[in-house]
Image (cartoon, rainbow, N blue to C red; front, side):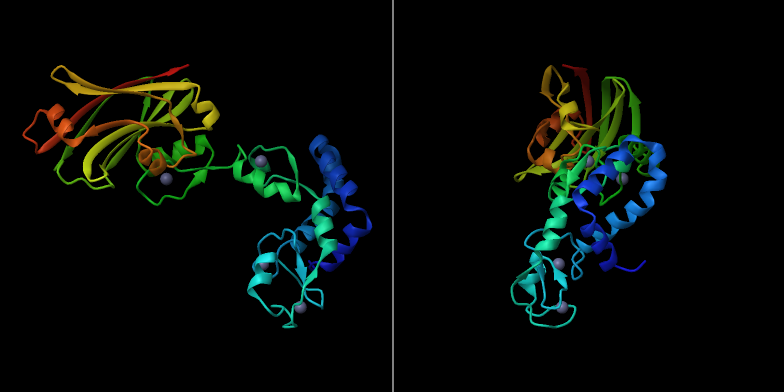
Length: 300
Ligand SMILES: [Zn+2]
Ligand SMILES: [Zn+2]
Ligand SMILES: [Zn+2]
Ligand SMILES: [Zn+2]
């Protein structure tokens, strides 16, 4: 496809605001109009979209959009970096591209997560802001420690945890989990475990790990919710660990997996067991850590 100029002209001449709005609306409302309209429309929206991509850094352009004396556009960041036009080497000067800024202003675009269920349209300048917090944006894999960068919706990630990380899956809202670790004196930040619980038709991640609390070795258990924070707040959980008539207990609100594992840990939002106490509860020779963590999740 021939880039840019023809598509740009086409849109400017036919009043982009009304046209884009109307067509996108039609797309949303009517499946039949879609096929005949969308080809041409997609073409021009795609064209305008391309024009709003900085030719130098490929990022989306926001005002002030600049151009060189020969009309090559570039974004505000690239304008700061370059003295001469990266395309034609002409000295840049200080020329705004108001026409393109206006076109951008008039555009309404679907969220980039439309295929994942987000049905709203957004003005060009609000789109990026929305997408950062779009509830339909994919979640990242909640498996800690690794550099796993798999993303997807919850059912996809549950399958991924099971198949690719061999994570234990449990049904039910109560748990009784035994953690055994040899050499408990080697506390590495990377020692951790994950179990997934299915309850109330939702999934919860129970994390257990060794880490350094300041300079003191400790263990920590906490629950994360596989979903949005607003839904996570509808639940409460308790965790308990103990032996010999002594007990540590934690009651908390599960954290959404939108909050990284590390963020939750560093905020100490969970059951923290100092190592000495953990070894006491283990009742062994100190060569092996054996902790029984029990707990429950319920709806508030
Ligand atoms: Zn740029
Ligand atoms: Zn130029
Ligand atoms: Zn969205
Ligand atoms: Zn993963």
